[in-house]
Image (cartoon, rainbow over all chains, first blue to last red; front, side):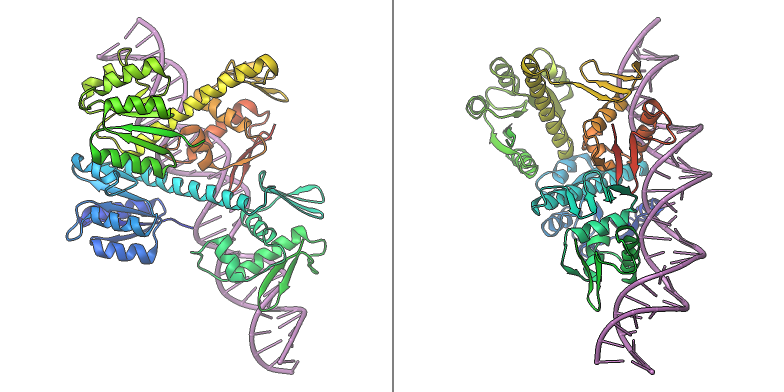
Length: 238
Length: 238
DNA sequence: TGGTGGATCAGTAGGATGTGCATATTGTTA
DNA sequence: TAACAATATGCACATCCTACTGATCCACCA
């Protein structure tokens, strides 16, 4: 859930400064001063954003960025020393998403990082919405007997009355409702609701299922909506 | 319905860079490096926006823009190399709608393009509305109980009394009011009210929401109009 | 009846929001 | 243009809310 940032710079002092300040902002930070290692780390760790100095020993920042571009959509913020590099950086040739000319203030860097990550989140949201719409759920309202999910308002109604839901509960229920009748394994649920990078116990799902049952089942002890499928997962019935 | 953009620049590399990035944004792109050809293409293809470099062989960008102005209302974004050209560009003499000094970031260019196209669409909408008024008098007044937003006069009334609003507040409230009942994420709000290239903290939204509440809520501490939806954003109720 | 998987519970660290103030930015006026 | 005013943004702290963990108890099935 925490954004991971890869910092690529061979100047140790700058590298440390960046890492320190980014960590202070609550990001996970990976660092390296080597271009090839950067590529490797990007592939394996899948950071949410990459900060890349143009000047690197061996394979330079331009080249690293070019290669990254072909493999992933991770946003890249380039650090340039000379103004005349800017054109190449943001242009077709290299394709960075943003740049900062040295010297820059940490404040500005943080601002850009935040903005870039925000943009990515926005895009993801839009895609989700689109997918949800494509999934022939033309209506944003899911109806099941005395249960209604209004995705536009992000509200859940039981017996015509609004029931307050915690964010995770809401997302979990929504996921269930969109896969009515299918058995969903805990792994699948964790991946789709919690995210692919969730680290933790799959018991977590159980707990949330329990909360859900409290709210949407007439008799939570004998669930009829969220059925336990022993050894497999859960199945949501209308 | 996709916007068509004509790029006029004789530097092939820049031309390609522009085309690549604009296409990535989903625009249809036409290119040429010649002033006369640009005029021809503008007449025939009727692009929605023209990006025009000042420096062109033969008939220069200034001249092209002047001629275009007499024939069509298509917005023109000029690219200038020297700062001292700016005055002429946007002034009466040439009449471009906006300009960018080289070097510029692709990010900034895209931002301007979007802004310009948005403006055009807005104007078109306004004309449509005006035309519609003859027949159906489409309301530009949003009414919610003791809150009234008069978009024509750009005024907000609470309990029949005009309340002064800061520009951003007004825009934010308007955006909310036009999406009554929908949950709007901070990301979405920033993009639509602040602009997609906003650099900064998403807490900014919180602060503005707070100011709004001070003005339009009976009890700002227990808001009934602008509801926070934890983990998701805000929702405006009538 | 033993073993495996599921349900339950409650404490706690961390996350999200509200709020006041400091600072930056923009616009205006003399 | 300088000084000022209005507005916007950043920051830090207080507060409230959630999600996750880990232990323990329970139900089902061989």
